[in-house]
Length: 518
Image (cartoon, rainbow, N blue to C red; front, side):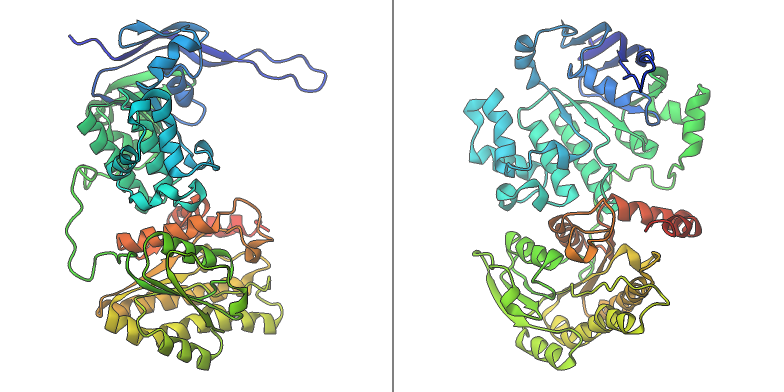
């Protein structure tokens, strides 16, 4: 029988706990308790358990990022349990980790090119080249144009693909993937999982896949190991464990998380060919019109469109003099526009008759409660709802004639109501309903309409919102990714996606929680 590539026998680890006040320090916390574990060559093992069960700690021990207190770890038949750092270094190229949060694990001061070059220069200096970087990008489904971007300029899915490319750059034998899709939008998760599974099969990788999501474990892994309180309570082939779990904890874990049964091969199936008009819009070569382009997400859209190869961008603002310096690589036409002025909207639509993508980004927030100042509420409705309607009405003929799409920048507030911001939420909800109507009306003409519903964004408009706040560039790129994927809606960021899932499960409970938000 072939020996496993990675084995762990009797692994134990305790972590010291700090003292509080004048009390003595509590005893060390037992994190791993006599763990036995192995991974064969070409095998994907799922490691599952609730938070605090020790999954990530075990994964780091297997890579010797953490040295255990007791036990033995072997890699390729060699004992690496207490191997000095100098002797471990040559092995690092053969064992890699894909981290849960690429935004914190990717150096924000390095471009994607530099991030990919670093492991190559350390472990394979002869292969550190531009061609190798482009090949890695192609392998994970990213265009080479992104090599000059920084992590914050990428969407969450793009960042995770860069993390995968960095891990695979040195052609490892063993990879630990730690909760790599937990922070991604649902629309992006399947793409990343499908990519990782195909790469593992094609490259013959041995992999430990750590996840809370049992449906993902079931469909991507060969075996599953269930952990509870630092111990392995059950392991076996995925089909056997899920069909007839032996341990009570495993049964409770499976019962607590609904598993989709109707389509067990969802990750293996090629994406179906879509009918003409259902495909996502291609950004490269498009002519885009961006309202509210002088700040925040609007300015980020201009940069993102330029980076993706847009042919021309109309950048609109109430005062064009306040527009940021345009990207040098694309034609940018400044436009004076107040979306509440029908005459200005009509003039802008006539001037931009070649437009193929309309991005409705203009919006205001008056921090007004539902029974507050009427003038403030009317201003929000005039811009956020009627302004969107006026833009859609004016630009629809060009979009119908030229083909293309429309992105309506809304907010998760379109589906919930926050105290002290009732009139803003009402205007966003009206705009959301209008977007659904526009989608139905324009679908027959092949015009794609996308609703973007992020949480708080790090802009002046959201200055009074508590964190977390998403970078504008991340929201813009997530929206463009969704448009190219043919999506109808996208909820960028963990907060918005979490609220979307909560609203699907129990909207009343979500609203009660949000009543205490501000």
